Amino acid sequence: MKQVTATGQTVKEAVAQALAQLNTTKDLTEVSIIDEGKKGIFGIFGSRPAIVKVTVKKEDPIEEAKKFLYQVSEQMGASIEIEVKRDGKLVQLYLKGDKIALLIGKRGQTLNSLQYLTQLVINRHAEQYLTVILDAEDYRNRRNETLVHLAHRLAQKALKTGKDVSLEPMPSYERKVIHTALVDNKKIKTFSDGSEPHRYIVISPNKK
Image 1 (cartoon, rainbow, N blue to C red):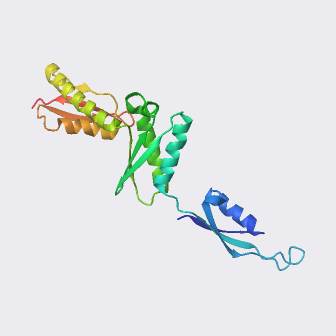
Image 2: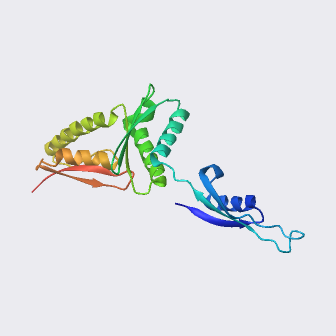
Image 3: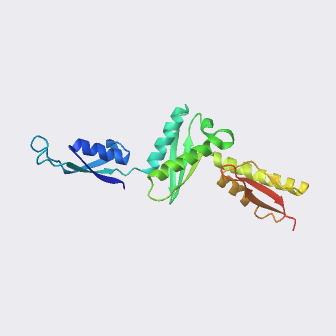
């Protein structure tokens, strides 16, 4: 919990200094007046500065994540509803709406970007690290089925040609789907190459 103690000629000035140090606004904080201060004679002799303690209110990380998603969807012209499921450190956010395709984007690229940003937002306010999965109209399951079929098809291609087959760059959880789909196929091996966010999977014939 962030808090600072600040001084000023008046309580108002002390609070302003504290808010500047915390880089926040008064509505997001709780103010405790330690000393109201004293002006003194002619504003100089016997004067005493005001002292305040300002504490940032604890914000619900999931509510902050939802607020972020509502703002983004509104700016994109796609009104949404959000269903939340939490299992320990895993937070799943399910989006529904008439124009949900705008939030999914081509091959889920927009959804993946939103998931990354939502993860940043939620962990800015969380006391422990949380993993975010963002889904829209069951896109993740449909995408996983597509990836599994793609994995098996390209594995056959690698075996037929005897050459490595490289897939397009994917986020880590999609690469994991490919690895898992082919883990029991002893005729090929899979590995990741490249650097984030352009890391991709290579399917290679096992020549042993």
